[in-house]
Length: 156
Image (tube, rainbow, N blue to C red; front, side, top):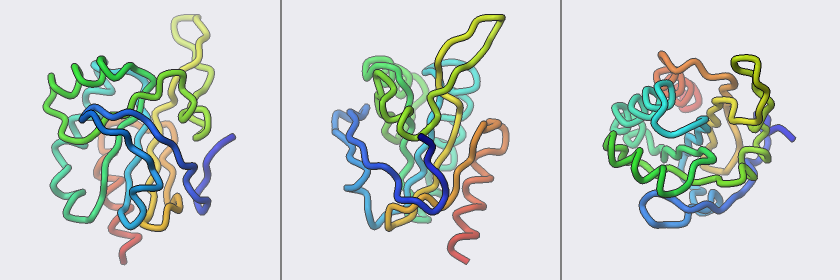
């Protein structure tokens, strides 16, 4: 299954780094940037998380909640968030059920090895829970700016 623009974002409930449990449907009335990333504390994922961190003020001023999701454990997320001062929740999708539902849990190949993992993807969800934009196969450089631009274009 793959989540596409125009559909209601599938609901989920996952544990967050701040000790809370995040249910997507509880965020109705707010825009949500839901970004899936492969692994805590790896170069690309760190760069992406820090870019969201550095632009969080702009995103929050637009009424946006940022949520990062990977299959890492809550303990791993907490270490990662603490190390880089990430002020938004990272959600632990151990077992990758949510990633599978969103269609971002894919077969990957690296160094001749085939394995299952996250395809870096961001979903922009509006106040009504509708997926407005999907950013597949994200290239980290310039991605957050691309997301901010997409939010501005939706508001125009």
